[in-house]
Amino acid sequence: MKKGFEFRASSLKERREFYEKEFDINKVKAFFNENKIPIPQICALDAGSDSGIIENKEWNNNLFYLEFKDLAKKIKKYNPEDVYYDRSVYENPKKVLDELKFEDYLLQELAFDIDADNISDVSHEDTEEYEKVIDRAYDYALKLKKELEKEFERVIIVYSGRGFHIEVLDEKANKLNNEERGALAEKFSKYPIDPWVSRGYIRLLRIPYTLNAVVSRISLPIMNIFNSKETIPDFLKNS
Image 1 (cartoon, rainbow, N blue to C red):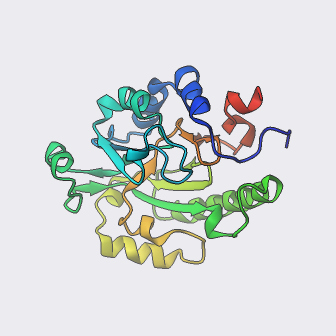
Image 2 (cartoon, rainbow, N blue to C red; image 1 turned 60 degrees about the vertical axis):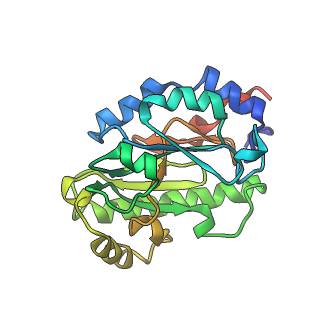
């Protein structure tokens, strides 16, 4: 990989540049609409807890929850390290936002998370080796997708920056309870999945087309084949 394309934390300036010049909220809306996923009721921003690179130290170790309609404005304010959506659907999302109690949901997108960290303890700072682990994660994601398609009709893969989300979009999957999700997590435990995501205890998924600023990679839906070059932000290409 070309020098300068390493996996590394983005600076505050680079994050700001990405969201001003590359990020397009319309692509995010199109992702949800084209895949017939409801526009998220709730999103969340992490200003920089993992890397410690943060606009305001008082924001450290906090998630800032918001409505989707405020996403572009809040990204500008917090210049975040991570941008997520809550994959649950709530009867009263405004009450959930006010009370920050997320237990009672009506529906929840079924998802499986295969990260490089689930496969190897290789640091992302070791670019060459980390690339190999990402490739292994993609192979696992493809195989899991194929297995899931024996039971479900609509399964997609989204690159998260450090791995892949395998998302099941069927209505019947959205209605599964935690016990049923746990059974699926057990069924597919031969894959290096994070069971907390599969079981529904971790609700947040990274929003496609946003920046994973811990490793300086763009989260992207995988349409046909994973092309790592498409995930590299301009500030790395131009460095």
